[in-house]
Image (cartoon, rainbow, N blue to C red):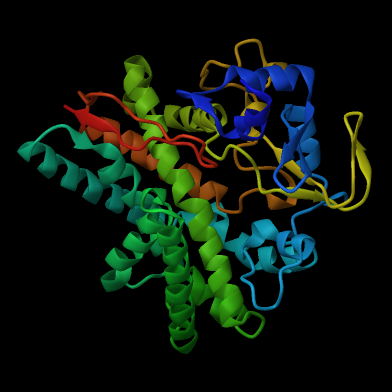
Length: 390
């Protein structure tokens, strides 16, 4: 690998594994300076201990992307909790955290189970006509969108359109302009939905937030929070459902245990989250002041990227860390760490537990049929297709 490829190494994979070069960087240069266009230096952090330290230290590292790069008043704020610092981050997160307790999420469990079964019905009907079926398109892609619809309170007759917007914003094959248009469409729709919910709050998260905190949240802020949940919960869950299914079908003894042993899917999901680390790097951090990290000097305002796949595959976590061992006692960083740890993590875990077990029980003879193409140079790693038959 040539020097000019180093800035991309954190986005590269060899199948399900990080490329060997990332392991070499982790072993030899745990805080690795990379030159990017504009004579800027970015520091790639790859070891579990260092990544955890950076993600957990909001005193020395800022997430305020808009503030650091100096967006003007006429430019779009990136939105979402991931690009905000305390006290604004603290203020907004306190509104969301109660909505993601297990007690609240259990109310959604029957609906998620029903949505998964409906998706499996469609797959079964499609397979009766022709095989193979693209499980990415028919299973991994729609379920997260529908779960977000259920969470936010998107009306049933508007969900098909919302699912399309969700899909289009993460479809980069049509070019960046199409993706940006889908992002704008999503924000336009969500802002309109918030305005309607303010007049007549429903039973979803938006309605609940407006009932409890409507005078503290303007429409744009609440729409931005909803968009952040869509961004954080759609592509990531889609990739995990596809990659997790791929691994289970490649390991039929594990698939059988998920299908037959109560509770085993919980251990499998946690280990798959660590192993896959579909979000390859965390939200960027900026040094608040000149500082030192692992003996490397970083100047105020310089960018630090934390490799989640590098940290979660750090040999310091265990000799066989490049293998999947359900039940492994490791605190993974797939959802981040510290005050910015993904607020929707419990929902994503529930979604995967329900979906994997239901899929394997419905189709006990499910198998991969053909080549599985992977994404290239993706912030969120995944597959392009997942052809299956049974």
